[in-house]
Length: 144
Image (cartoon, rainbow, N blue to C red; front, side):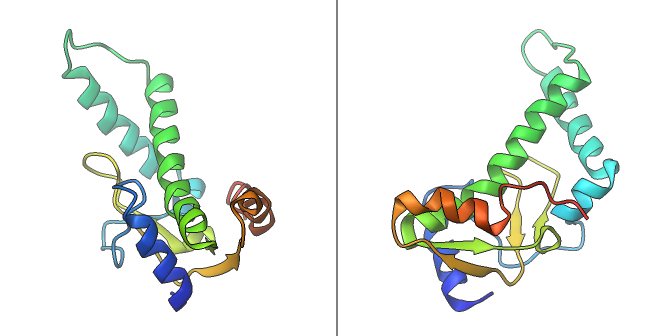
């Protein structure tokens, strides 16, 4: 990581568990690029969440599509929280390609996440965060 981007992400981690990052990914982690390119990791996460929901009060049978939507929203919130927190608290938006964002898609939320070597785009005022967000590619789906 560049020192400034790493520092910004560490500051953002103080906002809570959805903004916190692990130092490095483990062997059972997947990159965001893999998550987009291959359906298996996401399907496993949806199956795990669906099974967990079925153990709740009244053992509801949740449709797979509904659970997939909830899992997707949780993953996107997890992806957005660290760089947005860094931008708001440090005026530096960390930038990464999809292959440099790693997640461990097992266990409770928020899922563990690690970033490899982020660069940073200065956003000197909070009003400029949205413009910086769009210009860096964070607002676009990671497609190849």
